[in-house]
Image (cartoon, rainbow, N blue to C red; front, side, top):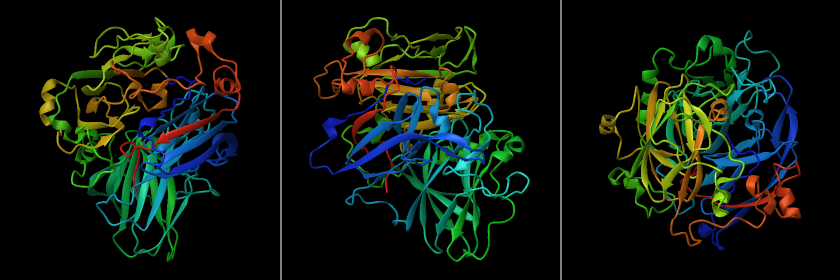
Length: 541
């Protein structure tokens, strides 16, 4: 569960230089009424748009964003992968508040392919027509760029839908940036009659591979080139359908857009292109992520002084085995847990509790391996070692696929398989060209292993991106503190920091503090967010 009274900000001043260019944005968060699935709903808009407007910058730029909270609820905005996301006190991501981030390569950085004729962003995700405060179950549909599905089937899709149309030209190559900004559902993305060449994700170039479709899990982003194998003289379906579910029951939730060629002679017709079946053959579905490899010969967006691209030769300092189980009732509430701990947000922010010697705000006793004890609600976090190189095993004994995300870091996905992880599984790790990313899928009844270099101090959230499990407590934090802190690796709290919980008495009464008091009132939020865009976190062009 995210702490709804905090806006988490990373001010990376040590990497921000005066001669670096800056770009400026104003984000006004407000409610508007739209119909993503044909039902008018109040959603969260950014500058009056749903989805929100794009943040477009280049590596090493300073991005300044003024965020104005015009909602009637508290606000938490996070920036991860290639989409800004909004999470407020009542699960606001289920009602919008997201938009794309596009980070371009600097001109001096070579890219391992010809530049495409155009860049197109797809924001896809499951959607619910019920109020987002209601417990989420099966979604009512899938949107593409916030719009309803094209009427490819007169029985499943009503007439008069406002669907997304992507205009392209024949003989050209386009790069699609596909983000799963949904709540809980993995999706299969495909374009009728087109080959899709995977070329990157989250700031990493891949060894290019051809697919007719690909899976994208909650919180993930994939970049693909689109190629057509025959004459382009009609419109084509773009489809995004649920994965790892009973396909017959979920058929009606498929998102459908139209790829329109400038020389088109007719509409998209006939059945949708089919996704591969996975309900009874999940083993085969894992072949795609296993086949993804980093392009180790391509130029990179930044130097690598830590040597982490040789991750396979770095000694592992600690192993964490983190197990997910299906939710159970704890103290009468349906809760989810990691290693038997269902996380409860602290009343006092963790790092402020450290700085002011607040005792009992949290516990540094998160178990580093799975255990059989009865799950409980607690504030246990991981006491991680600064500059350690750790192995994290994400063991999913739940019944649904999950996406795990680690704030503030990219990690190397070195292995995944079905069954229980054991130490002898390490013999099959990819220790040479594994992809580096900040979100990875973990299949039900399976495990995923990642390597993380802990060189970014702070308190970093480790969580599932599937909102139902996240808000049931399936998260923890890594506390990574430099024991020789001298002001160079961690900034002091800003003057307008919001004091909460045991530190409430320290709160200064001022205009700036009132604007930051998200948990005390619903004042409009105006905050100047300055970030240096790090290429290993974001995307590239």
